[in-house]
Length: 364
Image 1 (cartoon, helix red, strand yellow):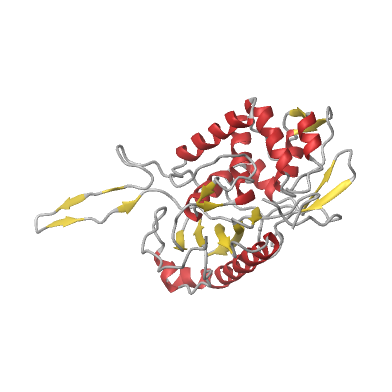
Image 2: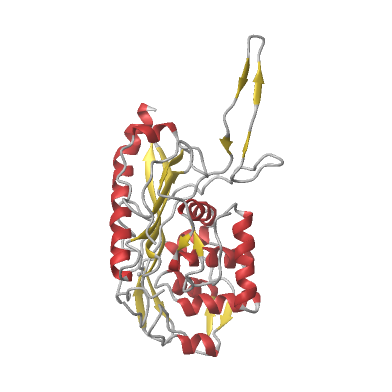
């Protein structure tokens, strides 16, 4: 999953906007799954009314990214009509008055915390997701090793494997030195900001003793979040057999953004590798524009361009977190072309949502 190289010398990121953390995921009724529903019958003296199938889970939004150190050079699904209710969260009534510039290929899914889904486009069939995989890697690490938003976290000693992999010419990496101590936060930043594959594998070995054992934890976490169309086979996204859907990655983004430390890390504009004197800019080129406060990029030739993004917008005087996922843009081309397409489509969605959502909420 080669990603486009990062550009050194980015300024530090300012503080992120104060946006309430997403509400807890709804708990499904007994005997139902995240993709299931509950058929309820209401009786009255006049007639028997049958309800429709109501999805129980909240949708999650996606954004993916690219980038790295010493990096090289990122199946096409057709766009179908959006279902009235996606497999995740029920589409909010106000979404019907929005005219969003959905991508013409691949998959996309968008939701607004406290309002609901704004819709889904494309067949929700599992596709390779490249470095978007690292959202789950970070989520599992922070579940096992929680830390405060401003804390350094635990200490991790880089092993020889991670150091040797720093110089790979076929994947995105970040420089680490064997035997050097790093904070958990700095390694998470090196994994998420320039998308260091070697750092993802280092964190997996540190947490679980081995990459295979960590992948098992990732799949258990995915099952726990109701990501039934997702399979992880590696921790970095290099493997094309790691596959997911926009809906599933939206679920994950929603869960991950509840963690203040995760929110702070994905909003980081640049990070310096200790001992290497190299500074990397965030591969998410939308960060800091149009209220964007994260989240993750990912690109490769099989996966195309992928972006999971998070932005904010005030609606009726209340700041709302908007999450989106765009997958499989220009698959089969170069990582750079796919990444550019994912950024372009995501930017169009973000600007349209921020411009039209407040008025749509008043009309609803």
